[in-house]
Amino acid sequence: MRSLTAALALLLASSCQGFVAPSHNSHQIITTTTPSSTQLKKQPLSRLSVATDINAVGAPGTADLPWSELGFEFRPTKSHLRMTYRDGKWQEPEMVESPYINVHIGATALHYGQACFEGLKAFAHEDGSVNLFRPDENAKRINRSGHRVMMPEIPVETFIKACNDVVKDNVAYVPPYGSGGALYLRPLLFGSGPRIGLQPAEEYTFIVMVIPVGDYYKGGLAAPVNGLIVDDYDRAAPKGVGAAKVAGNYAADLIPNMAAKKKGFPICLYLDAATHTLVEEFSTSNFIGIDNENKKYITPKSDSVLPSITNKSLQTLAKDEGMTVEQRDIEVAELSTFDE
Image (cartoon, rainbow, N blue to C red):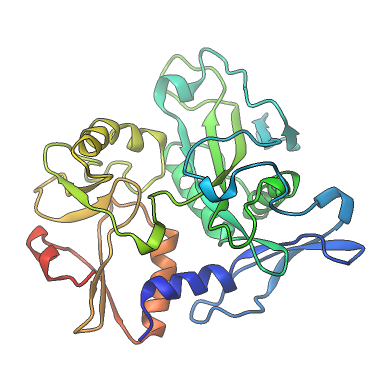
């Protein structure tokens, strides 16, 4: 049986959504696709196709950067995409080269935390194409998060096109194939209109910024890291906003996260807020337990956990590999029984 690490690599290589960078063609075709729920094919169905002149796209990995030394940190790129919701509708998007944004002092994002974000990656492939990993799922999730804090919906196709467009404009910053890096996209939706009373704004801003990155943790999938179980802080309360990717959820992790790093643990594992006996999720990712003997893939079932697109994809792969997928309560004492 293949390991799920290898299966994830296959998933990234064969079932992304993306566009073709320059080769010998006179134009390039941008396509976004959605993988089958049970099979990750080499030729997924196209949902959006746009023809672009070769000179307007460029080739990945041509920026002057130390590609083999990338970490997960901010680096300046050419531009970000910006779009404003005003008078009940989304305005036309624009590419902005300045990394700064003017925000009203009364913006609801500043006062009441009316903000949510996403994270996804674009990968350069051996054939010169650049592919986004399941951006339709990120579009659906940002809308679920936005709904929880009363922000307007971004049409899925609008979200995908925004991601495609910003990658095209920054294609030189997509790490080249074989470097181990990716172009990280950070879509952000926040209340930019002023309110002093507790109520939603009338104006919202959506941006998509891009950053070339390496592995989040040094060594990537081949180098496991040690995590620290956090028992004196909670990440999210029952019936709160734990299942939404809102900014405040990550602010709550800052103190325990930095304290854990000082002790030599790069990541925290949080327990349920009600009893502190059940595993919920890590600081930046879902929890997955593998039982090789019984061929089980086990992950927590909790309304306080953010639904992970990677976890969802791996569950499909696990089922394809003949494993039983269980979403259920996981006692802390059960951690020692998992193989990985």
